[in-house]
Length: 120
Image 1 (cartoon, rainbow, N blue to C red):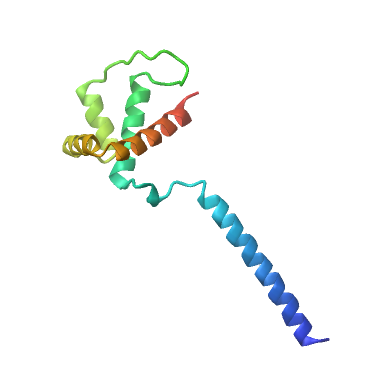
Image 2 (image 1 turned 180 degrees about the horizontal axis):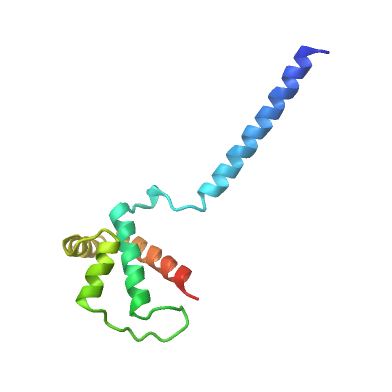
């Protein structure tokens, strides 16, 4: 048995397997949200809160006419707490989004995605 042939055969199979793993990793990474989209942890929590708020207030579908049902202060505080947000953090984020509209657009895109996932 020729050892050089065996090493070349194994080496080429390892290279092929590594190439396949790299291609799969690259294709999957394009499907996942990344930190490079400019959103931090608080933005993601805000989007999750706002998504839950919209669903609880009556926004459930892309096609229906929306009539929002206002939530009570207690419900809002409970929902904020569920997403590890205080009213102060909420107010600061709203102010930040007013100052950074591009960031707000990214948050809203995440909110829409979350709401659509929760829609029947």
